[in-house]
Every structure is written in C-alpha cells, then in structure tokens.
Length: 177
Image 1 (cartoon, rainbow, N blue to C red):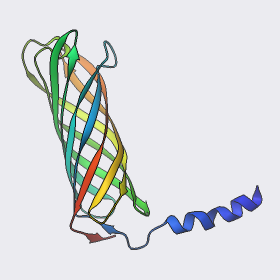
Image 2: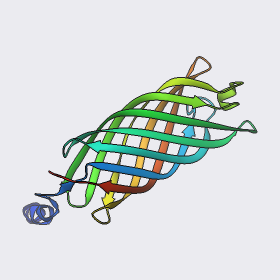
Image 3: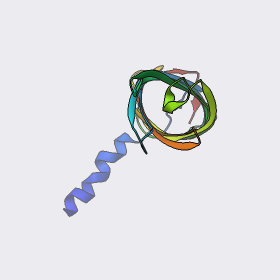
C-alpha cells in the first residue's frame, strides 16, 4: 500500500497543466432532459439548452443560459422555457478537462397546462449546478454532462426540477491561464 501511495504522484503529475489556454468565449448547445416538479407529480420533458459564457480569467466568468423543454403532463402537451444569467466557476487543472459550477437567476415561462396553469405565465427562477467539459480540439469541447437544480414557483407552489444536459461547446479567443 505504501508503494502505491509513493507512486501515485507520478501518475497525477502528468495530468496537471501549466500554460493551458483559456477561451474568452464558450458557446454551448445540446440536448436536455428536465425532470419537472419532483416534489409532487413528477414528469419528464425533453428539450434543448444553450449558453454563452465569457471567461474573465481561468477560474471565473459569467454565463447566459437559455433552455426550452416540451412534454406531456396529465395527457396535455405543455412546455417550459428558462432564461437565466449568473457567475461560472471553473477548475482547469487537468489537461483537456474543465469542471465547472454555476448559480443563475432569471425568468421561467410555463406554457398552458404546465402545472395546471390555464395560460402562459412568467415567473422568477433560480438554477444551481455544474458539469464537465472535455476538450476535443483547440476550438471544440464535448460537454459530457451538465446537471442543474432548477427552482420554479407556479400556482403559488414551489417546484423542484432537475435538468440534465449534454452537447457541444465551441470555444473562441484565448487568454493565458
């Protein structure tokens, strides 16, 4: 066991990066699944998630996130959209891998029949989560997973939602780490 602990740094050191470039702008788009209203009558909604992030340095930036989901609740077709903005914190110490977390505030629009509302409503929402990107080339990365808790409040009741996404990240510009 001691030998393994002594050799472990030899395997970890090659993974660290010294002068990794950090993109100025990252644009993401991908498939998204929303597990809606987990605290009462949960149902799934499929959709898309898009975001644009500006990295101010190697570990901090801001992102605008827009998503749209469609599904069936109680036999009725419905939809939900979000538009949120907030800070992003990134960990870039492993070559070609970025782990990030974010917290965002913004608007959530529930379509007709979403959580038994009769017409479209726009409400305040919040989102917290993170994910993992793997760099494929200088300008392209794969978002292996992004998982977010999405807080909504329709019909005078709080809804706890989980959104899971995966897709493609396009990277533009660069800053030294």
